[in-house]
Image 1 (tube, helix red, strand yellow):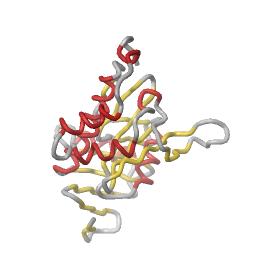
Image 2 (spheres, rainbow, N blue to C red):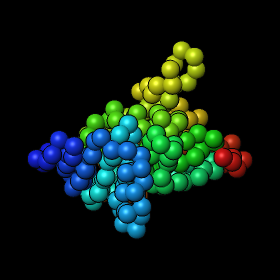
Image 3 (tube, rainbow, N blue to C red):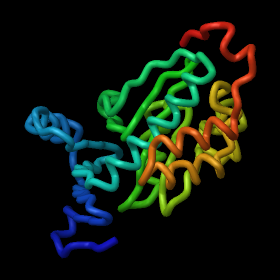
Image 4 (cartoon, rainbow, N blue to C red):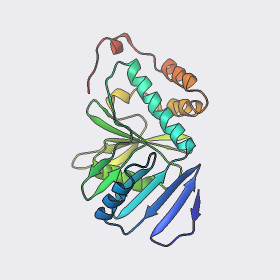
Length: 215
């Protein structure tokens, strides 16, 4: 990652072809104005939380990995005849507080999942945004490894994310995350081989295909 010299209120980060511009000390109204100005710009993603606006222009590697991750999630769910709603990079907003455009997002059995490829800034700010938006689980791809954060709710959990060894979403809990990371890396060169390896390691049981499960 490299940092470009810029004024203290604006920082530019680059990594693996990504360009992320971070503006601090901004208001929600300024974010909405910027959002309107960029509404017809393809590929660009906007984020807001706690007075900070982020503008991401993803590079080729970023788009490849996010697509491979989404493809493998959908392949696994299809193999289990589990219905899901793909919501892609749609804007998730909580008025005046937070907004995010994940690399991929899904609604699965009532759970909300967001997927992020991270080539530039750290995880903390991203997780705080999704926490404010009430996203149940965040999958973060960074340094060739997939890390899963699940939102713990309840009186003692303080609604924080916790790193878990397997997905907290029941439909995805069977997936071996270490094996999935290997498949994602394999998918950089062959999506077919990546899907075959994932499914070979997680063969569907007869009952998985007997009932069509809904969101």
